[in-house]
Image 1 (cartoon, rainbow, N blue to C red):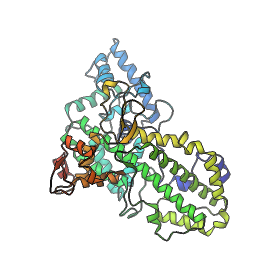
Image 2: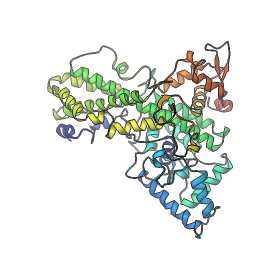
Image 3: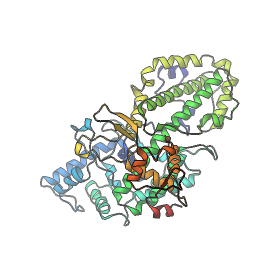
Image 4: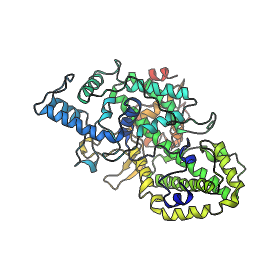
Length: 503
């Protein structure tokens, strides 16, 4: 691909150095909710060979098998239920509520309680080639781990927790066997490890002293896995959903910010400007603020997505221009040192790159709709962030309390209400548990505020005692009012045994 080809179709293919970077957003996110993320994780870790595009067809296939058994046919030999009971299980007991715009569509959508459900439910889209949500979570585990060995250990432990064993409740064990009988597919007996090139690691010490959501997520996974024996399967999978939706959003938002900063560095280099600060400090933020508790979120998410898209155009224009000038960049932009090499190459050859900023300005004008998140990649990224964070609004109003792990809550009645950052009870319970995991002794709500900040959710810990967050924490029994605490509130660990096991 040449510079001219890139300028004519800037979103079709990125430069190899950009695409292969550990800091690139891969796989490219599209629509997803918490259950899509968890189902995608099941497929990635324990259902090898099941393609995302095949999931809706598998659901239709299962529906035909159950309907045939209900209408007089014979159920599978190993099934304990007849056709009518199996249909009630899939379309009643396990059914996940459809959104308001899906009420007229016929497809199987169930709660991802066990791995076998992911064979026929939980794809991001019902047609085409949906994105691999599980691959994003797997990439986060590796990026957030210091070594490949630690990443593999975390992945193995997560697989063991996702598998249904004798330690799971009776219903989970029954459901796993029954769905396997009806579908002919069982969750794997061993974790599916990534092939070469599917996951990447950052250089040792690359993000020391810097907030990094993937690193926080890798640690929090251990705390959530440790809590599994203390609750039912449904309670535990809901807790895992709450964690992955917060972490997946924060990771993508962090990558958007890093890429915006990378383009700022290169743009200054093209303009002949210099910054004496270490490039690592210029590239990685020292604090995260993607959402603010009690404040609206949509405008901020749109602006962040638009900034990432402008950075993507700018960085790729630089890379293709260098290749077109016969001085290609050799690297992958997977660290601050590699970006520094690219910056130095740009400074050294500034005379040959005089048209780069003009090319970028032309692209910003011609791709205005994408940059405004009205179509294409921009629309997909905005949709991902919003639907992962939104409280799901089911088509059936009787199920409006189904989603308790949300981060964004609609303020006011009706569809015109504003979405604000106000994590639900399950999200708060998960955050409190993870913030106290491995900690000895009492901690104030400042500890919770710090943990939320690690995912880019800003809240002033001094305000918690008086705001809605403090009220929710009291209602959930997650805090004690104490005059000895700095803020007057001490956190209460919801799972003491799990906290001890994760230390």
